[in-house]
Each structure stands twice: as structure tokens, then as C-alpha cells.
Length: 420
Ligand SMILES: Cc1ncc(COP(=O)(O)O)c(C=O)c1O
Image 1 (cartoon, rainbow, N blue to C red):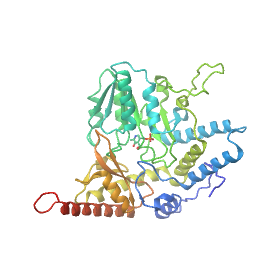
Image 2: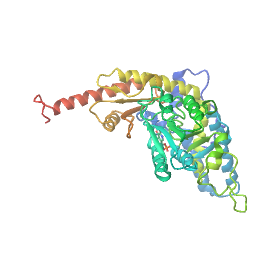
Image 3: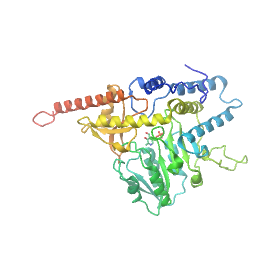
Image 4: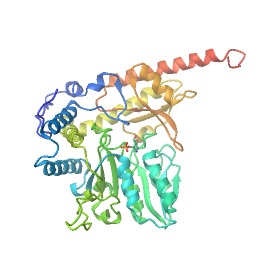
């Protein structure tokens, strides 16, 4: 189905007279993927709403039919990109001039790390719970510039993260780099405290917010972080190859644009960085994807309601934690009072990829994560689109997987104790 959709001007279809159950049913009807399996994997990719698909198809069709470069296309693209910066600025508590569009979280992180004028012997403080999207560029700058990485063990992220990181700070620390929501434990980092601590040590705070955007409330000015990289495709339900990087206005000059776009010249070929964070934007964007991102963000803001979404994610996260913790044979790997919608667990003796595969056979889509030095865990993402009944059904599935595993183990090890 294609429509002539103008993102941002869609008539609102949820109403204040709907109760939560009606509203949820209505919204779910616009997320086709959530009826295929129990959809518990926004941590990798969220479900794509119908309006985003329509916007993408519609834009791609227009490009094909009318021609990709016709008068007005460039101007339309600039306006479209600016609309996304405004939407994201509002959503994240930032000024639109502090938002650069990117193609992924990793791109935003790489842009910051490759834009700092490093000196041999500088230090970066980070944690044991980071994703390769942060570890890999950190390793690269360590190797390239002789930077010392201080990878600090913060356990499951549920303790006093700020003090633990502060103990590793030195006069050479240039950057404190960490996730807002830890991908392998679900812990939400105390970013305001971490940013204040880093600032007191004259270090810049770089945040991997791949799991945070759309999962937890964000107010960047209030948190005081310096750089914050988000994806479009996870909890914000946009398409892949979309994302954004926030750079705080007063930190803009501390980061060089490593890949300046050709539009940033004075007409004589001299580099003339644009005033805002869009100086960090790399290459071109795929218009249909950006329009789909705009449609998804607008839908989240106007129809779903961000506060409604955040509070559902957190409440379902708690329900999920409790339901899984009650299963004999399950070990929880998330600090209950520090999480929102990422719930991590283990079944001792069973590899997390097998747990995810067995649950998928039972109609539940979760994910495993395993990247040293972090833990190997099975991970449930509780999206606002999930219902309490779905959480309970998932817990039943986990209980059955545990029982199958124990049955299989008992069969494989006969009474003599020797493996069969
Ligand atoms: C914490 C974290 N950081 C970074 C990434 C990479 O995100 P992207 O694919 O947007 O670069 C992920 C993806 O799973 C993640 O969970």
C-alpha cells in the first residue's frame, strides 16, 4: 500500500478517550511485525511502523517516477534534514543546531573519537560493558595515536559507577566514554553524575546511546554530557542507516570534522565549516530512509506519546525481571532497580545463542549478547508495544526451555556420571 503521506501532518488516530488496552491494540495494528512473534528485540532493531514503510515506499516511488535530481530536490533535502534535527532536538532536550544526522550510532562515536587532536599518552576511561561499536574505535585510536585505554570493571553497572570511574581518572584523561544503557546488563548509567565528574577532571563525556534513545527519557542539556550518539533503527523504530550525533554547543570546536562534506566550502574551495553540528555529517543520506525516520519519530511523538512509551517500557521491564527471576534454573544478569527495558539472564549450562534459538522456535524473538570482557547473556527488550500477557507467555517459554535443557542434560549423563 502506498499513500501520499506528508510526515508530520498525519491526522492523529489515537484519542484521549481510548483506554490503554484500546490504544495499545490500535498502535499494534500499525506494527505488523509484533504479531509474527513475541517481539522482544528493540535492542537490535525495533519493529517498523506502517507509516515509516509507507513514507519510504512513497519517496522511493517518487524518485523513480519523477527523476532523482529535478529542480527543488536539493532544497527539499536540506529542509527535510533540518526537520529531523528539530524533531530530535525536541526529543533529546537539545538545540537542533547541536544535532548532526548520521547513518548509525557507531558513525557518531567514530566521528567524535577521530575528531579529537590526540597526544601520545592521553587516556580514555571506559567500562567493561561496552559494545564493539565503542570498543573498536577506541582500540583503533589507542593503536594509532598511542592512547592508553582504561577499561574499568563496573560489574553489572548497578553499583556506584561514577566513583568507580572517577578512581581511574588522571591528569591525562581526555575522554570518559560509556553507554547510557548497558547493552549486556540493561543498567542505566547515572549520566548526570558521570558528566559532572568528567567535567571536574577537564575530560569530555562521550555517550554510546544506542540502547537509550526511545527506551528512557533523555534531557541532554540537563544531563550535561558533551557528545551523544544514537541510532534510528532500535527503540526509535526507524529504518537502518539512520541515526544522529549530539555535540554540545560549547564542545563543537574541540572536535574536528574528519570527513567534511563538499557543501562546506566558501565557493572558492576553502573549507568553511557550517556553524552547527551538521558540520559533522558525512556523505549523503538516502532520502526515503530519512523520510521514514521522520514518519516514525512523528508517530512516536504524536500517536504513541513518548512519556507513555517510557513508562510502559520500564513497567514491562520490571514485570519481565520478576517473571524470569521466579523460574528455577534461571540466573538474572540485570540489576533490577537500575534497568528500564533490557532484561538479561542466563540458564547455567546453556549457551545464550541456544537460548535465543530455542525461544524463537517457541515464537519468541529475543537476542543474545556476548562480547568480552562483558558477560554472555540472553537479553529481552521489553518494548512499549508488548503486553503483560506477552511477558507472561515469554516467561512460560523460558520455563519450558529450562525444563527441556534439564531433561536433555539428565539423559546425556547416565547414573554412572559418565557422559553418554
Ligand atoms: C550499546 C550499543 N552500541 C552500539 C551499537 C551499534 O549500533 P549501530 O548499528 O547503530 O552502529 C549497538 C547495537 O546493537 C549497541 O547495542
